[in-house]
Image 1 (cartoon, rainbow over the protein chains, first blue to last red):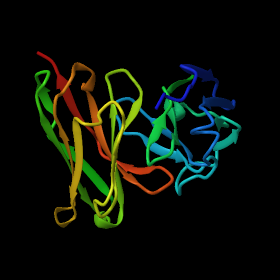
Image 2 (image 1 turned 90 degrees about the vertical axis):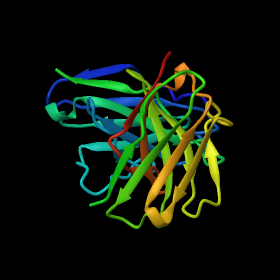
Image 3 (image 1 turned 120 degrees about the horizontal axis):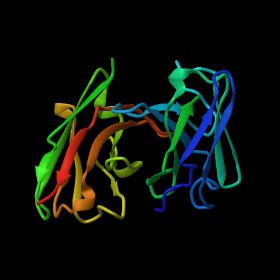
Length: 110
Length: 117
């Protein structure tokens, strides 16, 4: 149950696009299309932003999109806005009803 | 509105025990599997435990297996986490989260557990 690997930080200017990677193994990200992404503002609970690699829950902006290739999943945020500044975590099903999260990425909107 | 509210956190000495609770409202609690997820101060999220809707199956992260026990009472719309043999590294905010098969769609606000002498 090793954590998925994410960059510690990414940044972008308002209106730009950024991508956050999430690298796992063939036992988790590479083996299941059950990758989700969570946004967490300081002192708040996480919020589901993407599920099943690329699907958006109702109410989540279409500026958020997800993809996967092999053992690496990605979250792309287009048209960056100030309110997107937060921590982002990927999560993958890892078999035997267990889940593994990434270490988190701090997004700074410049 | 679906809501989860955790309680029971606090300061406990190493080797001690604590029982967390999570009260659900606004949805059919008995229809959903549930999870506990924790976050150490300044650190990332860590999945801790899962329980099916009927309590037929429970699963644990290796880091807590044998020390923590997840349970639920569907009549009381409540989820629990019994934590025994607590260690310094168990210090974290503990969240309960609703499981929808593909991820966790509803989270509580969290309850802080501090293990320290």
